[in-house]
Length: 93
Image (cartoon, rainbow, N blue to C red; front, side):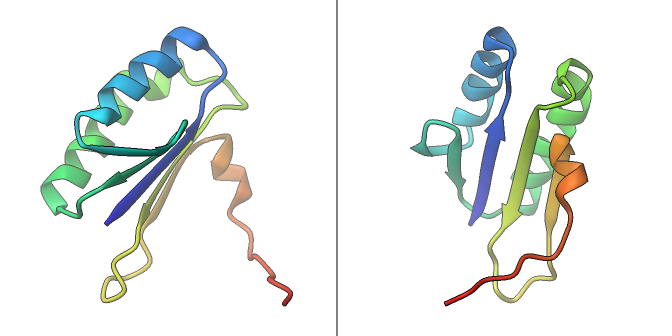
């Protein structure tokens, strides 16, 4: 399973991105989608983001793609503002 989450400030870009990502999976929350895991689907999503959306992102926009496959290597691709957030997380219980 792939999780795609986004935070896009421009209404037009956000609406276009939502309609685009909706073709691949189901909405879990307003800006979070679950997509069945497939290398082809993941490659298509990344390609479309790079080609059509990345140039429209503003400094505070972000898209996170998380591959939740336990047997796979860590596969997190960050776009926009999220690139700056690649720091270790500490969880307290």
